Image: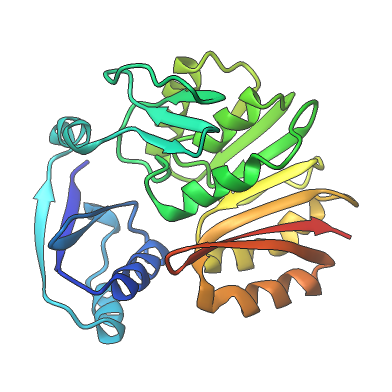
Length: 271
């Protein structure tokens, strides 16, 4: 399957972040921010011109479209993929990079076209907030797992069972490879659009986008119990009041918000 690359001209940082949030809601899967442009990628058969036009009414900017054949994607992504280190807690790298010392956990991923390599602010903040949680012996769901980075980290931190959910077949395939590369045995990959209500979890991770999280809060509530920690990201500072209100309506208490650029991550707990 081919991907469509859309290149947007240079924007102010806040405009770029707003554009990424809107494009993510419209189904775009990956982004690259360069010095002079923003590149956004979506499966060619998932692209809707009308959705892009609606977004450009909110963030007017010049753009160009290019088809990227799937067979060219891995080489392209590898050429631009750089390791990332989150404090002294986690390093994320590809197998072709040298090992990274002086971190507590090292995660190796195959840099394919899946969201969540740690380079984006939302994944970075999720990892930062995970450091403060106790995963030892806990059951976890990673809703919208992408590359499975958060699920892999949860297992490395001692979780005994992790359900990693994504609707995208490409993400599931990539996550299976990444889990194997990190010798993970407690991650259950599930291709689905919603969280199954068949079980409850100690910790819920969801790094997706505002609308998907809001649409699935009832499901998140149903798989939570008193004391379940819920860690969310994929939305912007301007969305915080709506998210906090929706959490409260579902009996979920916000504990902490962290911010990186215009993006935020919220740590909450089920009352």
